Image 1 (cartoon, helix red, strand yellow):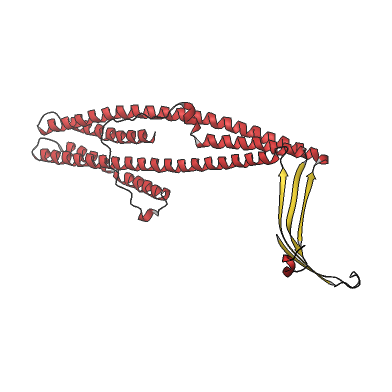
Image 2 (spheres, helix red, strand yellow; image 1 turned 90 degrees about the horizontal axis):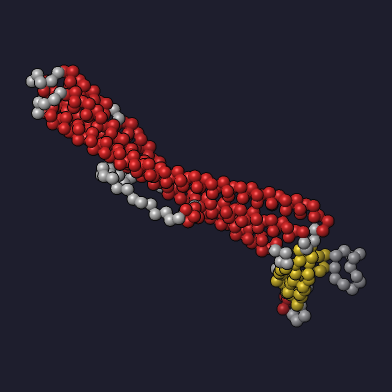
Length: 349
C-alpha cells in the first residue's frame, strides 16, 4: 500500500514552535490471515469448488444438447431428401405407366377410365413434392442456425439416401451406474447438493469466534524523499477476534435456511436421478422398437415394390388387368415413404 497525506492545522491547534503543515508518506505491505479453527474458510472453498463443478456440468449439458440437436436435424434432413428421392422414383414409374396405358388406350387394349386413374395416381404422388421441399428448406435453415451461419447463404452437404438394407449397431453403454455417472445433469445436481452441504458448515462456523492476524511492514516518513532514511521503518502485528456472541439467533436462522436449501438440493438430486433412469429406459425402448419397426418396414417395402414390378410386367405383356397395377403401385408409394420415415426414427432413437 502506498499513501500520502497533507494536513494544514489551524493556529489554535498548532503547538508553539511547530509547523502548521504536516505531510505523511507511507509505503507498506499489509496482510491479514484468518486462523481457520472452525472450518469456515475450508467449507467456503468446498462450496465454491462445488458450485464451479455444477456450472461446468451444466456447460457440458448444453454442449451435448446442441450436438444432439445438430445430429437430429441432420438425420431429419437426410430423411426428407431420401423421401424426395422416393417421390422422384415413384413419379417416374407412374409416368411410364401412364405412357403405357395411353398407348394401350390408342390400340383399344385399355379404357380411358384406366388412363384417368393412372393420371390421378401420378398427380397424387407429385402433390407430395412441394411439402417435402418446404420441410427440407426448414430443416436446412435450422441446421444453419445451429452451426452459427446465415440461412440465406448456407449450403448443407448433399445427404445421400441410405441403401434399403437392415444394418443396426449395438450400443456399448457399459453398466447402468457408469451410464448415469456420465450424465451432465446428474453431475450438476450432485455438485449443487455438495455446495449446499458445505454452506451449512460455513454458517455453523458463525457460532464461534472469527480469529484473524493482521500485520504490516513498511516505511513511514514526513515526505516522499525521506522514505529511504534510516529509522523510517514501521511495522506491526495484531490479533483480531470477532464473535457474534449476542447475535446467535440470526446465525442459527441462517443455519436452518442452509439446511432447508440442502434438503431441497437433495430432493432435486433424487428427482434428477429418477428422471435420468426414466429417460434412459425410454431411450433403450425407443431404440429397440425403432429397430424392429425398420426391419418390418423394410420387408413390407420390398414386397410391395416386387408386387408393383410384377404387376406392371404382366400388364405390359397383355396379362391381367390394369386394376392390379393400380392397386400395387398405390401400395408401393406409402410403404416406401414409411420406410424412409422408419429409418429416420431409428437414427433419431
